[in-house]
Length: 463
Image 1 (tube, rainbow, N blue to C red):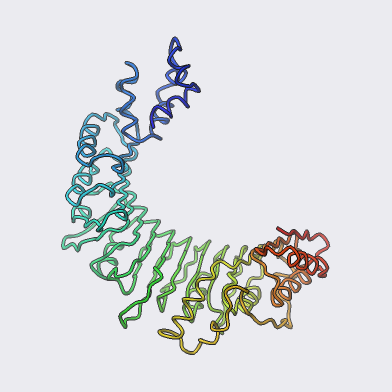
Image 2 (cartoon, one colour):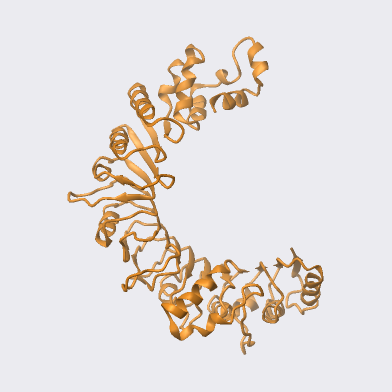
């Protein structure tokens, strides 16, 4: 790795470098710039530069960022290398200490890396533990909670967290990623998150049998939240879901096909972006709390709810996988008076298979009819009834329409024609189709091209 980077930085091939006389161009750069370049390399390659010349012998010791990766060497050698290189490192401040562990790391090796990260001169510690390629997940020690005072970023994948009895505090933790993690229980996760007083970014991707029924997230400092559940069926009778209280949240991404509820305890007045992809019967419980959003991506039931008004909404993306996507679209257009960009897309077809199973065997017996009629090969079946009033955004603000996976069904043609006819400010409408039938594509182009347009400057594009 280092040799390839070295030759590239010098702009030379191996033969050219072999016969070159005098200092190479890289060595002529100032120390500050060389240290920035070295900080982009794995630490093993950084340390290897000490053999290049007298000038390079001690330069690596001042590199501000060290990255240790155990994925390509024996773990014993890796740990010895970590110890020796950290002892020799002389920079007064180590900006970032990054560990990538898991493929070869053992349970007993984790505490050694944790102790190495607890240095007073380290400003940011990143620990990535990924044991997804192991036959069994790593069990993390309790020292993870007590000996990482400078930890700023923590990423865990396919590990088991143990319970703790003493006080836990992550005073510097700003980013936490938990993927396929198993917890001692609901209270543990809630307590763990409440100990992160400056946490800004949280990613939770659930796995089967994670021992959590309700994800309770009460973090006042949180700015970004990604909460995804796995596609599996709960075998117990408990009501699974989440409870959120994050008044500073700016970005929300929820994907939940198995849960039954999402309770947001307070309005999220700082929300800028939200991606809501859920199977809850009442998505209005979420929508009513995020009315300040400027961008919304929605894949939800369009149940008969009273939609809140989204005065700040600029960009709206609607997934057309539900049979009632037209109702959702028209409802959102009515309550988005300042909408500028509209995106329609069939994001996922597989959800219908899941919904049919849920409707018939587990949840929502009263809405079976919504999905049993769906044909996965012919696109969503939906109904269109032209509204008596044209939404305000079509008359005064909508500028861009982007429709992906347009299939030219009767409903889609009616919706497209309605938007083109009434969008007085529309500048560009981009329509793309996955159809491989050239005759069908030509027919779609003809129908849309001859549709009346409310905007004389509208440019109609077919992709």
